[in-house]
Amino acid sequence: MDQPLDGKIALVTGAGSGIGRACALALARAGAAVVVSDISAGQGEQTARAIAEAGGAAQFVRADVTDARQVEALIRATVQAHGRLDAACNNAGVLGAQARLADYPEESWGQVIATNLTGVWLCMKYEIGAMLAGRGGAIVNMASVLGTVGFPSVGPYVAAKHGVIGLTKTAALEYARQGIRVNAVCPGFIATPLLEQAGIREGTDQYARIASRHAMRRLGEPDEVAEAVVWLCSGASSFVTGHALMVDGGFAAQ
Ligand code: NAI
Image 1 (cartoon, rainbow, N blue to C red):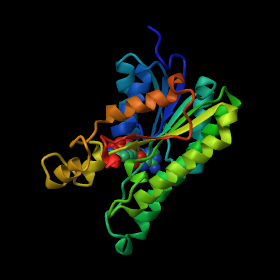
Image 2 (image 1 turned 30 degrees about the horizontal axis):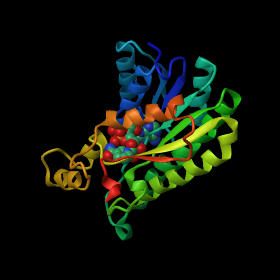
Image 3 (image 1 turned 180 degrees about the horizontal axis):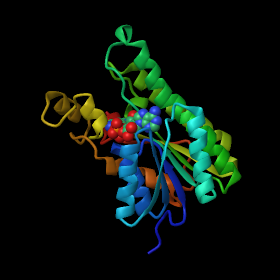
């Protein structure tokens, strides 16, 4: 049976864990050859192996999205290996420290903005270049429900994710007539190592409190986000651009 991304070349950053890994696996299931990228070689290679074991096509390329030269090299390696880039999911991100603004450590501020906002811009910068030289393409930026509302103790994260939505809309306007669609996905809280590292684990009070903020009274699964990414990368969403798609169990509807 034909798959929606048969013959397509897709790239996922931060694909060594959580949502990015689910996206890479889902894009491969949908027929794409996937360039799996992450700052962590061990985790990224694990994802690429999982794709290959499931019968898909994947290649790992290490890159730190905060480093322009590494991002440029990642896109160059993708185009050298596959001839072009059709779809990209700019997913790499960190939560950073948790503190109110007046107490927020400057170093963590810098890391969160560099990874979650500047990293998305750097990826788009080189992806768009490759897509313009190819057949156009689809970019999906990983924002968050926290790109649409405030949330205490994670100021730079909230600011970066609001910024990602703004960049997404701007890029969509700039490249719509050149065959590049640019959208964002805004997940609610998703059970991944990012939340676990922040102490949000099943069975804790904090987990229950956060679950209760979603209309569905639960956290999401990485695969539920990946389905939206696959759709936005595919021709099924051919008239969708500049959109921030909530995948949040009703968090922001309240
Ligand atoms: P995660 O921590 O499980 O995975 C993040 C991946 O990004 C890791 O493999 C890590 O090595 C990689 N990474 C970190 N810094 C990097 C850098 N400088 N360059 C390249 N790779 C880097 O996190 P999760 O939860 O899967 O998050 C993925 C994305 O989804 C992030 O952008 C996050 O902000 C976003 N998101 C997550 C939500 C959640 O509740 N888990 C909710 C909404 C958005």
